Length: 334
Image 1 (cartoon, rainbow, N blue to C red):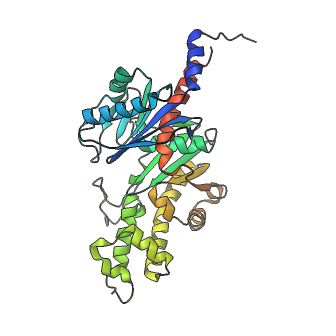
Image 2: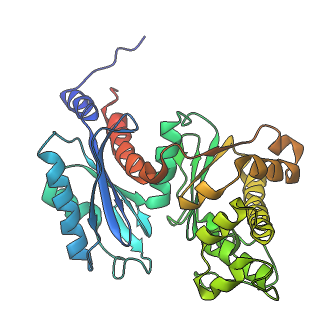
Image 3: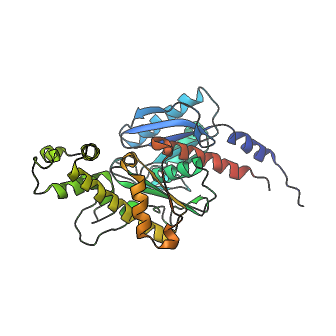
């Protein structure tokens, strides 16, 4: 048996991994952060409004980190951000409309220079996927696909315990797989008939509008809402027994199932985990039935579909745990 040498640097890294990391979830309207250890929050979350401009955003993150440093010694910082991230350099290489001017920001470099803490930056959907899988202790499985249902559809893929980020850091953009060939719905990305144009929150509203066309307020009160029709109104009406709203919800579940079936046949995953605000509106029993009915038996018979355990905290937990796991890998004795 070869004796392993434990160096001072590995001991130092081990100590660091037993201290919490700060996970930061950066969105277009708010920045949320909390201390994370063992895939759990170990502090109350803090939140600030997202300022405009990259320099102001970076300073807001630094201020949040400083608030946590008042109460505990931190091992590192993890950032979950909208956009496409070069995870090797921590630079934002692709921005979104929610964060104007964010592309090109060397976020890892800027934060490490100011905080002197090891920093890891990743896409927000990737971080959420990592948080969900680690919290459920599913990191040792072959494949986990985490689907975020919200205004749009995001995704993260964990294959053999590692995030799959793609050759150009754009892997997991599952919301833009195509589920129709009719060029009927324009997606926010500029392409037609993407999954999120049907299965996201805005997709549910679009489906309901199609069904409501030609109907009157005598048939359903949803007609009276006009441009004020929302996902919440549709879901509430369906739960109250409105047949038209229930039809819209059934169609929406069909659309979600269509994307999941495509992914299932490509990935043959151990499980899907559904998170995001619209996950609260999903009938998981119905969805599982639809997916398994449309899958090849070998693919569908053992497929699990879970609802998120972490809810809105998935990105924070994932970002923090990514840093902790990165430090743990570096401390292994050779």
